Length: 127
Image (cartoon, rainbow, N blue to C red; front, side, top):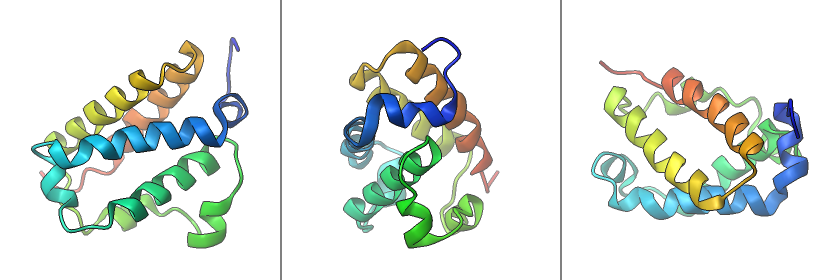
């Protein structure tokens, strides 16, 4: 797996790997002091499905996300949420904890973190 490309991740961890990752993330969200209030009152199961389908698409799997929702337009879709640096950092902490719990191969872990960090930073929309 040396030199793993992003589109190779799905072939290694499959649906089950992404399902575990995203479920681990959303299991932690309600207790997080910053993310919990952002997600309060939202349909976490639907959010979990959207994130899972997006990551599957993004990392080489079936394109359900595109078929159901069209272009990701991540910044536009996240505009209604107040995301500042602290929210970004908490999102990454919670996602990293879920990622570590999954115990994927180091190459998979590295490829996912290399994408998730900058993607989370790009969602910042408040000072």
